[in-house]
Image (cartoon, rainbow, N blue to C red; front, side):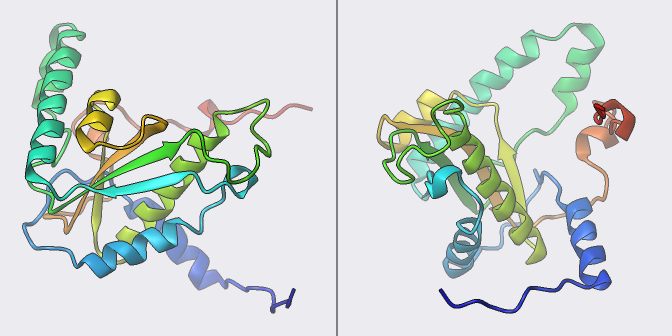
Length: 216
């Protein structure tokens, strides 16, 4: 196999990459402007460069263009969201009710991202002891898609308040596919450096000492 010169990423690129990470926000407010289908395909090609267990590439992207299918997804969100609201008490419930948690009606593009749990690609490498690595691989692809979209001025919102089985049935995908992410994609109305849930008092950023430990 032909070798290539080692990639070099200078300080300027490293700073820009860190800035991209900071500006990768969960977008819920979208402009109505359409997004070119070629751009979406290009972003999926980039996402497919992500690492996967055994090089299995288990991600399956579904562009949800059907208005009827979208309405089914929205109905699932509305029901699941109402149930989630009931699980909180008093002040936390009032705060939850004020949050905007999706942009399903506004976003011009809906993408459902599934994991093919029965793929033979990768020949089972790395999955015997941790079969969930297939799903983790799909999450890595979602993150790659998200960053690539942000770098091109697009916003992405990950909607998780859904019944995954309802979505799978509504989109008529194989039963072996597990829903990992339902993404709203479009040009954002506004841009904020801080996460919306932090800005509205739901949850602050955790300090490094609370998420990092060292064993000697």
